[in-house]
Image (cartoon, rainbow, N blue to C red; front, side, top):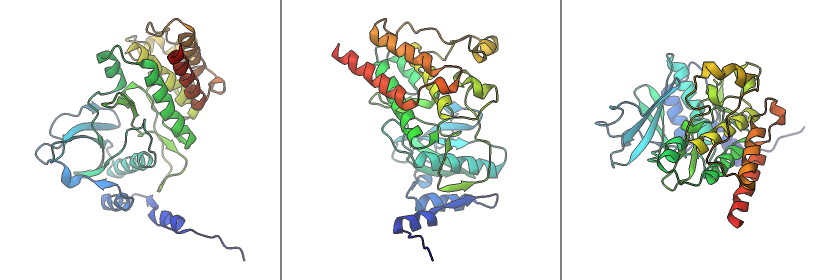
Length: 314
């Protein structure tokens, strides 16, 4: 009779797996993440200051607050939104699971979690520089190509680990005190292997100006090639300091964008030289209408790294 050998690590991993159902309680999730050695910040939040101010980021899926700990250090606390308590817990657990499973120098680290009312909140470092669009606006002489290299490196890492981010855009790309890219927000990400089992659910979608045409047309769910499209749109943000297509009303440009007739104009800050031309050509490949014609995120990273190194030796 054939037997499957189980190592101590595989047994421990199996024991840590948790199936989230409508019967799953907040305490079940707290216990699960504590067993995975994720820090519980609940008692470290200053009760006189926690979540009393307006959120610093308010989206359809979540609120993000700047919160002081008892030691007066600031952290970001993210609370998922949903009218149904079960789905609210499920979304929070799903995102926290994906976030916790991936560590990279250009991905914002998750510090832990906190129980806020009946919610499972996510705790991460507070980034004083804000998101990358704010950063380039307040630091006009920053190295934009290096920021693009770091962003592509983070996306390539996720893809190599079978994760589709699903919502790459400037507001989800923060900048550390050292000026390094920190990708965040895994609320709609798709991951092949998770430590928590979930019932089949819609992972949600990204944001229109950054979304690939095949997603907007309902022809596809989020994919790695769609991430590459969004990556190039975020590169436009880094070079222009504005969202793709600027302040133009989306409804006015939606049809030509979907048909492939309209793409962003070349940024003024992109140098007109061999390297600048190469970066611009790469961007155009990234937003090809046919997903199969777009390069992989790894190739995007390799080319951006090449142009960066060539610039350094010029």
